[in-house]
Image 1 (tube, one colour):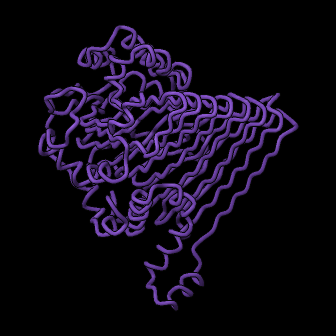
Image 2 (cartoon, rainbow, N blue to C red):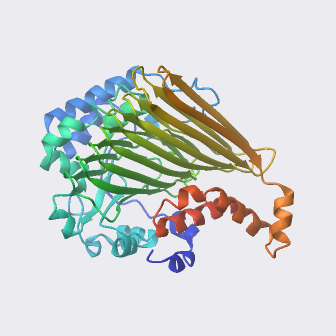
Image 3 (cartoon, helix red, strand yellow):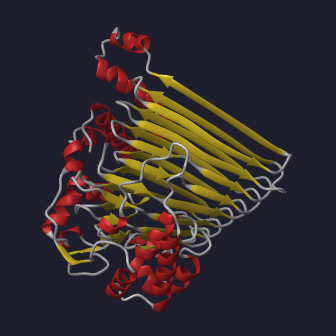
Length: 475
């Protein structure tokens, strides 16, 4: 993915829809029991404290109801965890992954070659991690950043080699397993994911990327990402996800925890292209200290149902948060996305911009929360939700919640819903475009606020995925 031109020539549909025969070194039984949790922890040779955290999360999961009573929420009646395989260790010799693509087994190497990850690493990234099924199979960081003390490794390695940092931050202060049922599920059977640590006053000038691929039918992927950016540091983390379509449903329930130190800046970008047999249910949260700046950029499409609401706690004076989200729902899809921001200190600022597209009876929804605490004076928030629909069968809703407990604040909310008009199509057709190209041009302009925030390689890829969704070619 070295250039705009090369990406435009790529057969994106073929790159994402291929599948490989399953080849695993270890595969757990279906379902979630205490024995399953113990087996996963033992296979990873984890310390006792991590096993105990898993077991506490399991207890929370067993005691919590499914979120089936949310107004207009996605139908989760088919999400049966007892039918999911929660842990598959891929068949590679080196636990924790290799640092050379040529050392991977041919089938796994071919998978990431088709996805373009090695090319992206050469041309646009300072570090890459690649997860296949339940574990990281490749991990590498440019030496110049390692010399500055930047750590980028898989979470299993972090538990062993950076135990104090992980024990302090993992599902403790940011996303406790008691937060919701799927956070508890994640805490019990998490596997793989990324650990990023950026020392004080260190700015990582090129993005770090992790790519997560589900290949096996009927499995769940539960990677955990933990990012710690110390005072004055800066890092951009990009996450890519995909899975081929199967007759059985797959479940993705990742967890993300971001700690933004004083005057630090973290940008977290994700482009998710799951298949229509995948339920995508994540918990992502950041805590920003004094003057810290957090940015979430999310593109979600392809899945049967998505519930994705990245949240930020603005803990210190002057901290800020920016959310940009795009959701695309086609036939049989319910994409429920949004943002949550908690203003817990004075002079904090947040902006939320949501873009949704629905066609062929698909449903999108913005579900958001802005909370401004008593004492968070001189804080400000602005929420903008724009929805674009292709037809009369599609649906788009906006459900913003504002909890304002302080009078000296600035609050704004704006929502628009529109349909692609015949006159717009007619205008573009008169300029030489056919019907499909005219619609794609309108959509590309509509989502530009998100794509302009991404490196060119990823912006082009996102536009190609949107085009394929419009054609009904993905999933």
